[in-house]
Structure formats: structure tokens, C-alpha cells
Length: 167
Image 1 (cartoon, rainbow, N blue to C red):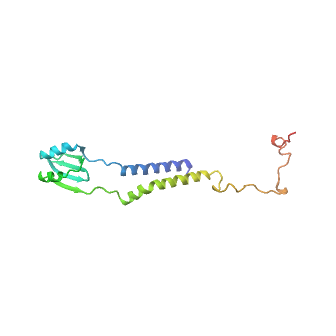
Image 2 (cartoon, helix red, strand yellow):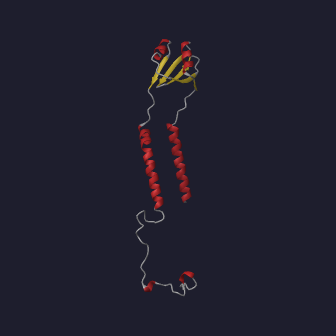
Image 3 (cartoon, helix red, strand yellow):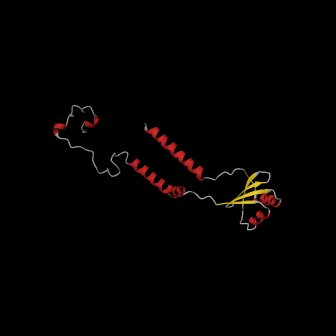
């Protein structure tokens, strides 16, 4: 496989991983429309709400006509639960969503692993020219030749400007 194909596959894998990370950690889309809190409270006082699922500061509402929507609690409202119960609304409490242990570890270690990966990439790029690594600058590639190994004569290079003497 050619280097270009390997690079293309690598970038495709990186793109897929990044898209899946942003998809899983990005904002979640709720099923239904969003309604402001004051509309929710007015519908609550008019007995139009059948069920309220409370998840942290978010409330998923099911109206008596089976329409659904989501609203957010802007501030802590200590009377909200009492009002819901007094209007005979079914209240369902859900624990706030916690990221998984794997996601937490990934989020905390990803920046450091990315920096280490970039550092390794640059170190490998730097040693590409020398062939033996970053510390091979002191090692000479010159070979010692004896007189019987020399096969080039002055006649072979007589036409070259470099072989002509100055003066």
C-alpha cells in the first residue's frame, strides 16, 4: 500500500473518531419542541398537563391532549413540586445523566495523548533525513579506502571542472 493511501486511511480514521466523539459528547436533541417556562406554568395552572419528567433542570412535559414538549427550570422553584402534585400531575424524577467512566477517562487523557502523539510525529519527521535517529549526527558515513580499492583515475575525471587545478 502506498504512503498516500496509508495517510488517507489515517485521516479518515481520525475524522470518524472525532465525529463520533463530538456526536456522543455534544448537545443532545430532545424529542419534541421547546417551550418557555412561563408557558409551562400557565398550562399547569389551567390543568392541561398530565405528566412531567424532571431531569435536573429540564422538564419533559406530556399534556392531556398527548402533545409533548420540553422546558427548562430557570431558577430553583421550591413550589414547583407542590404545584405539580396539587394539580394531580404524574411526576417522574430521573437522575441527571452522568458520563461513563470510559468517557471521563477519554476526556481527561485525550489532550495529553494528543500532545504526545504530535511530539512523536515531529520526532519521527526530524529523524527521517539522517536515517539512524536524532542522535546520529556525530557518526560519519565515510569509508576508508586503500590504494587497491581506488578505481577512479585522473583520466576518468579529466574533463570535469572540479578536477582541473587552478592556476
